[in-house]
Image 1 (cartoon, rainbow, N blue to C red):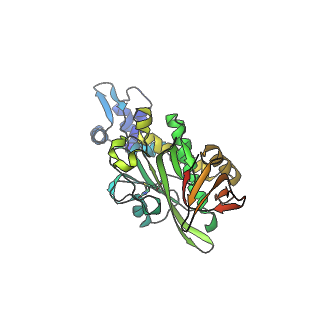
Image 2 (cartoon, rainbow, N blue to C red):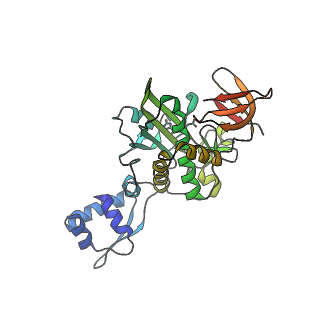
Image 3 (cartoon, protein in one colour):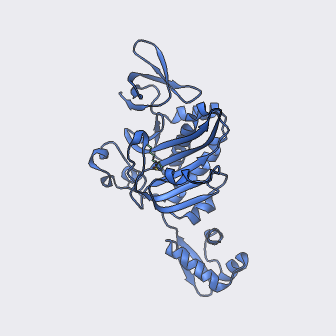
Length: 312
Ligand code: BTN
């Protein structure tokens, strides 16, 4: 119901209470209560006797407005919680319905890759986990990381105008600083993926001084880069709608899109896997999203996961 009110008010100008009440089949006083509850969530709504209601501004984030912007299956179900340990943990306990999204304003135990901590202060960043049930083989699960990275990068570029790039496999970067990352967790059987969780964390309106000292030189946020605050509702909506499109792309398109957005290809890199560190030239990614590395002795290695640094 709140979503319908937002949609009607977004048409612009004053909308009469009688009209909204009629559209929604509710009384004036019921509408008044709804309007007040939207105000409590940060919507600025002017009320003028005889004219009706006018939307002046929307909050940085609201699940009600987000729902009005979703176009497909990804984000059809949204579960928002102000504070949780980790949205990936929250999502894991739920019925795995493709496209369900879990969003938190803050995480007390946000997790990064390789057991690292993901700093997750409130009122500033995006922390969300998306349940995906794609029809792909477990060996191709890495593609879901590429899909998440491509969707997020496209959305951020379009909404902020900044040249966000992807450092293999899934770091969202601005120059040499990290803006966001993706934590993919997969539950699979030998021949199928039961479901995957794409956990996406992106620093949006966080001043960099909110981070521990050791992270400040290597991290950034959209606020830090532009001096401007961006509404999380619109960024999240764009990411989810992009994901819908990117999930349906033929694989060759997806890989090409990733190549075009990546800052890793063509660079000398060092990749630390679970048992070794390999240096070489990042030549390409293969059909499964693995990094193709040409080592100094000329041999070619396909690497499926690891921690990568750009050397030059
Ligand atoms: C990385 O190390 O680059 C991955 C960071 C992933 C962080 C996100 S925030 C939402 C989701 N919940 C978590 O605990 N982690 C992921």
